[in-house]
Image 1 (cartoon, rainbow, N blue to C red):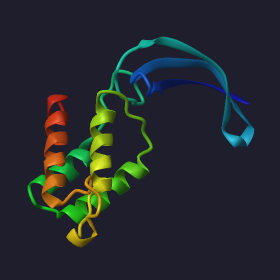
Image 2 (tube, rainbow, N blue to C red; image 1 turned 60 degrees about the vertical axis):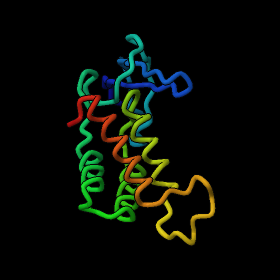
Image 3 (cartoon, helix red, strand yellow; image 1 turned 45 degrees about the vertical axis):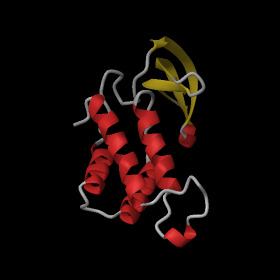
Image 4 (cartoon, helix red, strand yellow; image 1 turned 180 degrees about the vertical axis):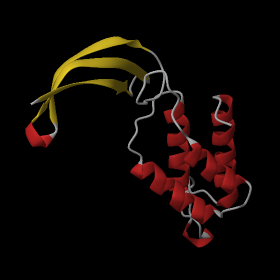
Length: 147
């Protein structure tokens, strides 16, 4: 059995609050990787998860995809496929204010329908509507300091 310390971040989505925590005396149980131990909350504040509590997350992959789409480097179908894939494979947990921005764009990309004849729902987005959503998300990320 190994004892380690970890920084943790717990997200309470209903209230859109992120709690920073420091876990002490965490024990790694055997080869399973299961953990047991205590957690001490160190206050609640709206930030994003990182390996260090005060570190901003690296969003270059998201910003790059958005920028490439809104400047017509990649098409709407390419953006949809890449953005959805990136979000689905994301291992980090983002809190407010970042999560709502990238999650809303995920929903927008998910409702995008490339072929006009297949757009049967009022919420189905075309290329330009998806581009407008990406522009909105990029503006919001820029306002958060992600240039």
